[in-house]
Length: 430
Image (tube, rainbow, N blue to C red; front, side, top):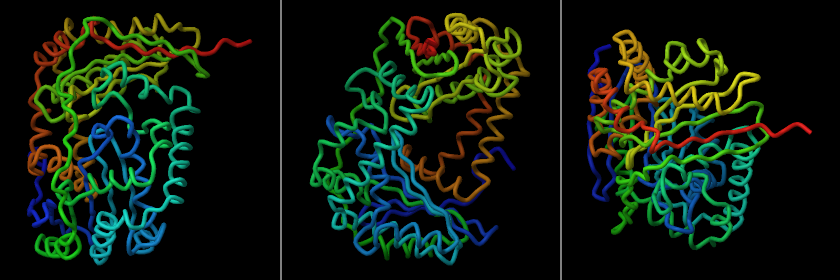
């Protein structure tokens, strides 16, 4: 495939109520992916309403005006399709992939829960899904070794009041304290057509999708005033390291080293993405070569680095390693820090750079190889940058990153004086 980033057609329109519709026709297979991005995530949540965006990810499957509880899932799966939803700090998205002949069904279902959830939302449904979220918190964060790392890293990286200070799972106290009317207001505020992007990729023409979108979404009224999320683009450097040590029921010491970099979608974050691949992607990475294969202080399958693609604030770069038996946390943390520090002083080689770019190219085209992957990508760029065609810029931007840019960014942003280090220690055996 060419390196243009998106060699398929893209057509867009905007309905009278503000809903943006993106279509990328692909007749390769008789399937379509429907992806609906709402510009609401945990960064939008007002004080006292943390966890609301994630709870609605659950509530949107619990019935709407013309669709009974659990029927949305049954109808899609009964038609041979698949579906899911996710929430992160920046957005909530809902998506289905169905045989092309069931495109109209998928659009009707999405429109019904956009415009018809509030009349169908009951106290019983709300209470039930609150309990589901509580169980999810226990299963994913509280009762899993190292499971609460993200919950701990965010407050270390972003100060109180910052929109990324809290995780999407939110506060159980906030979820318990809110009444039904508060939740209904949250949905009415953010789940509006002029706060959403509908993307369809696959075996359907733009004219067909535009007509169906207008048929099912066109009568849903726009929301006149949608509150903007707090501005998180500036995070004042503290000039001192953030350190937290947790003693917990974990099998071995583990260290997370994190830094704030640049927002996703900026040239600076393109450098971060390539830097992260050099630092911690796979067996050829610096962390693996030094700590797992060289000094043999880290477990081979539990060492790496990655950027978290957050678009509205300096996004984090996280390096992590888990100790081999007999290796202490201090030695492990020092080893991770040394490898990170050397990005500024030990030049990235041509071989390292080529390897990182090859890995990123493979990951990009793997995402683009499916209609659902393309639909999610186009929805993201339309929502966050106003133009789905900007997706074509990402891969070329990664391929243009130089070794000098990596060294410059490491020197500027990855210093020890503004570093976050989270360390897990096993509980002592009685």
